[in-house]
Length: 230
Image (cartoon, rainbow, N blue to C red; front, side, top):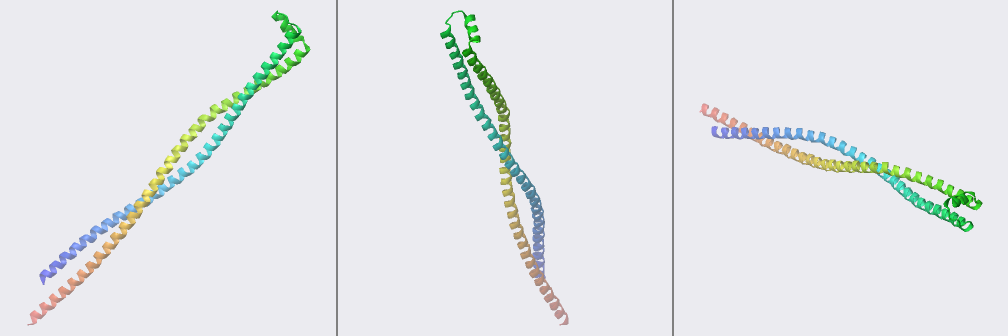
């Protein structure tokens, strides 16, 4: 009888130790779960921030790219216009010279220049020539302004693109971290549930063992009382 009591007490002690270990483990897991939930909130905030930043930089990139494309297109058109202006000026200049030579085919350069400056037809065309030259200068000025805009806008586009790539990388990084932390939380919740279930099972075993011990001790007491009576 005493041997049975000792064995039950030992088994009860072993179960108590198991329960205690499981409870410590459960406490640690719950603490870690709480920490992971705090981490999840932090990661979620970072992910949302970089998602907003990515959208903002995407919009900026599109706007700057459209502006740059427009400037480049306009600059190209001004370049073509400038070439046409130069051709037109050369043509008018040539026509004036031709008329001057036809009317007064003298050899001296000074006489030819004087004729160009005094001939009525030549003067009209020279006036048109000056007008075209002014127009060309204006076109050159506009082209220079567009080139300046391109020089300023192109680095902005590159900088925005670098920032956009950075924000996209960070968004993907935190998105992956978000998935990883969610998975860890799910696994911890499953493990906590298993620990709680194990503790519950050991507590039930402990109750049964305590019940068995009470019965054995009661039987021992009854046996002892009966022995004394006899």
